[in-house]
Length: 240
Image: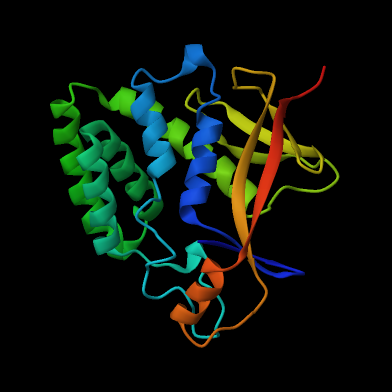
């Protein structure tokens, strides 16, 4: 889960809500620049974090009693196995993209390198089975990663004040994309990679006022009963 500290308490965005926001961004990509296997790319973007379920995971509170932010969760082979298995059940191409994402996240961690190396070998087999190419996978994954990065910026409330520019990520075209917050709730992206000149996205967050909990179960109950906020933003082209 994505954890933000606010004046009201903990603002929580679930991993699945973050994934849905990433898919909303992905779905607006210019039609003539969408990857060939478009629907599978969109589905993988939406579901890239679906195994991480805050309402069922056993340990979601760290020793000081606060909720664990997603960055605090270490590499877990069993989690990665479940994520890849669910993706492969959907289809080999979706599985390839999810496996690529796992290697992107953990590939530089010493304890994860053997796992990621084994995963890379499996990906080569799956690419042959799907009669696709490494280049095609690269294009799809770079779009997934861009939308993931953009969604994380929004969900972590990282947008800079006073219209200061910040980098989102490189897109599948190799370009570096930036954003600025022109008004509260309005983000300007340049260069412009989307089909429409402006569109709205939304995601849910939950506010938990209590700051510390004795157990993960106590926090989970508070999260389940927390008030849900529907957050809406406009993403727009830089005005001429």
